[in-house]
Amino acid sequence: MLKFIEKDSVISNMLKANSNDYKKELYNYWKKYNINSHGTFNPLMEEYYSRIDYAAKTFAIFSDKSGIETDRGEIYIQFGKPQKIERASTQYGKVVETWIYEKPPRDFIFVDNDGTGNFMLRK
Image 1 (tube, rainbow, N blue to C red):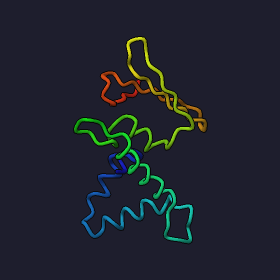
Image 2: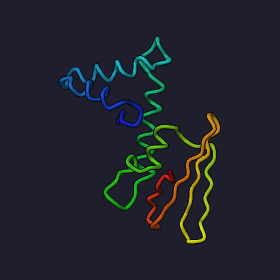
Image 3: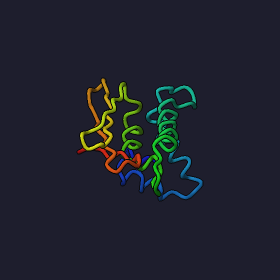
């Protein structure tokens, strides 16, 4: 699940560890990002995996894709919940969803081209 925030080379190195060492590698990976240095609870790790769970459930579509593999799921995992979501439809009946983030300021525009709920990120 780190593929959304980490380079393939880092993930590959972690996966080379045997099954017993993999847990240690994963723990060490998150340890460097733990703002709670005196405890074992890591709020950033908790937030990241909560986003993964939310995306898997919320953005699932009627296909073989899980919610984390959709464009909205990937953006949600990387940036979290947007401060504002606007929905509109085009003159052709396509639903457009705009996610607005304030800090740092950025917008992501998703379009459901075929009416199935598969919102694609407009590039």
